[in-house]
Length: 480
Image 1 (cartoon, rainbow, N blue to C red):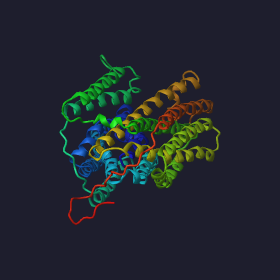
Image 2: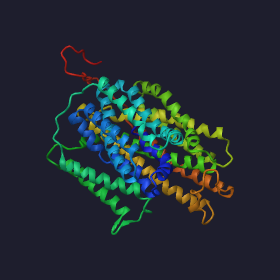
Image 3: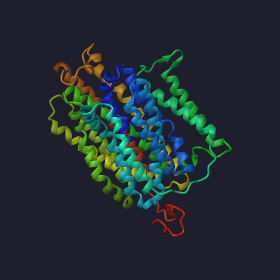
Image 4: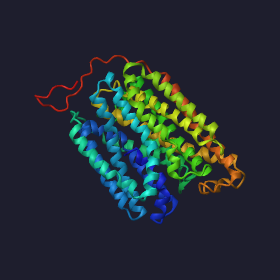
């Protein structure tokens, strides 16, 4: 639900614009507000899971997310919808680190691969399911139902988690209030600057405040946060000792490139399918189905392989396949390419996804101490989300630049305004070429990720790990 909600709204934006009688800038904030409220608190909510228990924090976040989803669907103004999306993003931020932390704490390192495979496949598939589901719901029922759908799913999830997820022991922590403030402010400035840079043409926002001043200020505040974590006398919000583990540091760098690539590749493809090939939103989203299907089918298989072999080899193969698939797309994006041929690189993306998520996440969590599993999960999800924000901003800039280069003078501004079936034939070649060239950026970033993965250390046997019992009951048998 969380990851689908980061993409599903993009399909519904035109319907929201008409339904709430607003403008495009306000509609963009429906997504931006959610992403900001989601990304900024991840470091903090990960640590809260260690302090109060991941199950409790997850259920609290799920309640907030589900109720705010109903609020979104009932909103009768754009201002109310944006406010509800902020609350929804906060609920999502409470939930996300706990899922990975629970897996890390329940499964021993050498039996974690299959679980992380399903966790990672969910993350990969959700980004592709969002546009498909959004198109079907908006076309069939109206934009409100992209939010109403979360309510029954949220209620079912609450019951299942309450019954089946164990209450794991908590670890006492002193909460670092100054660290909370510094991390929240720094992340907000950095993410807002990157996310909204294209909106303000990477220039002035208001008065002396510019996009770049916010980004630089965010980096400065985050630097102060790191220094405080290093030299402060109290218990740190972010245990920097986590980064002494080579694989944890490299896995965070690798997942940043994955977040960049997976987020940035969808926009040029959807634009090509709709604007050049004349597909409806639902049809264009269905062109991404092979990736989702293969990701689901192969996730358990790859998960078992992760436990039996060096995950570096699987992750390296996945990153290389991701780069090859995106390059293949770049070559194929022409106005007359047969539709069936466009499904082949998408299937290759499915193979790549299966080889990426589980090996990298398993590498990141393998050596995490249980008492900081939430903090480590918060860091990992934060870096992935920052990569996604960078990918969204980067691809928008490159698409605009390539359209300016490939289309006749004066046609750039109007090219994206044409309906799917009304783009003049004279512009189709240039538009398709620009979208294909834009895909070379995530392909290059995937190769950077492959280089990072290449330096993963071979995991050492971890025989001292003892799985935690679900609850401190005398009659309960210890978990395997």
